[in-house]
Length: 113
Image (cartoon, rainbow, N blue to C red; front, top):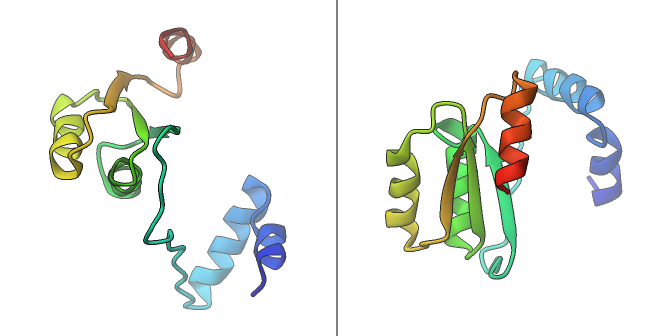
């Protein structure tokens, strides 16, 4: 599948969700792989839900690639940020507490950034 075909299938949240459900039902498993030589030095990424699962894996991968990684976590577990710093040798991992269901919490986060 070409890049433009993938973009069309996943270019908005509703289409992406529906396509993902279709893919799961059809037993399709796809994995987007980042280039092995990915260099994100000088870049900043903000990742929500980084205390576990996909968010944690993404944060770790971005930190390993040299990015400044901002972790927006509902639980604000400092151990997770320290774990990513330690495993990637990247001191530019910063944690921010946020509850994405609370607009005031989101406002506080944006003020800190």
